[in-house]
Image 1 (cartoon, rainbow, N blue to C red):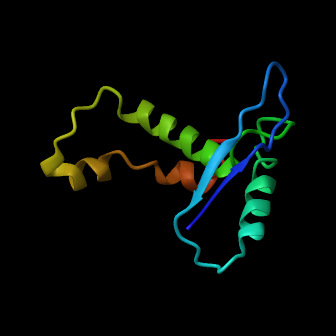
Image 2 (image 1 turned 90 degrees about the vertical axis):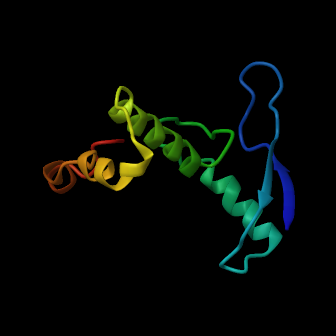
Image 3 (image 1 turned 45 degrees about the vertical axis):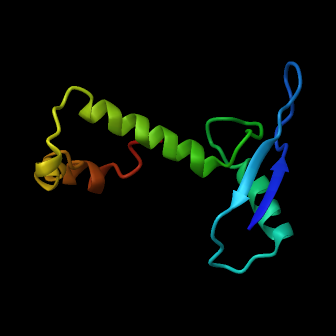
Length: 105
């Protein structure tokens, strides 16, 4: 297991705080340097910002997707015993997936 700190963004105001990373699992057998480099480059891939961000873009997108999902189920009462039934009712419409697959970004 590898722990490292990375400051991937410039500080606009004040001091930039480093982000701590911990490698939990590595299917690709990357070296520690390769993991750090990949993490650094992913911090420059967030499309909503023209500068580097503090943590990798896929985590920003996961956060945005979770927020979007929360909006869809915000006022819904979910019975944990009927989760599969509720899941099928809250699916994204087939027309949206096929005609506008990038509706989120």
